[in-house]
Image (cartoon, rainbow, N blue to C red):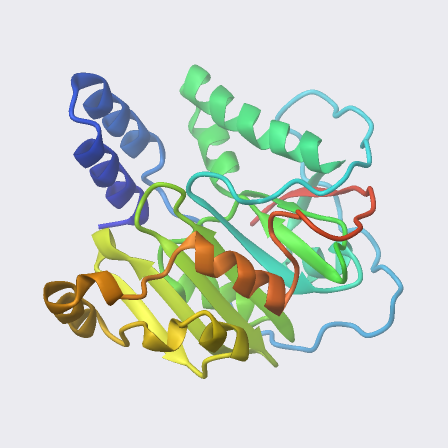
Length: 280
């Protein structure tokens, strides 16, 4: 069962009425396909220096010409059912080139968010397979925020899919927020390797807790988190009140320690623009 099937199952379980069932079916029909990512054979180091790489070619537009990009302050990537990467990089162009993405348009944070939401709504309204596939492959590659570039709107339901992207970089993390469903993840990549991963998606029966614990995790009690699904089930049966489980309340301080506060709630931030892009 894929993530979106699991999402629908959870929604149906929590909303016991006809509207919930209808909504679940509609979401399942719309989001049934998965992203295809480029292969992971190329693991060359990120280009050094602070100069931005040249901009890749623009993707042919599926819509009217965009409005001028408006620089603005960062907007949190944490929404309901959301996932994002934080990549140590000096510019979004470096990340775009490393992943061989196609640029759709330059945009500020709010413009990118609005564009992606409108693309989703349009694909539903027009029942367009082309727009649906475009939405599924569309991400926002942000301007640098305290030394990290964010790749937002990228919710993945398999650790292998996450590693196919994360292991392309020297310093990178992936995070997922369920915001109301049982799904959380934080995965750390160093030198093109996965060094720490927590991934919990019960409806897909996926639970991973592997790699060396970091100091911030130990301080938060993550060292008491079950190592396997079997340990998890046993702890839930015998000592449920003391089970440490993956959650946003753990993920946020871990992300803040590993890279940047994903809520952008503290610190000084600069206005900037990034790029709406698509995986090929």
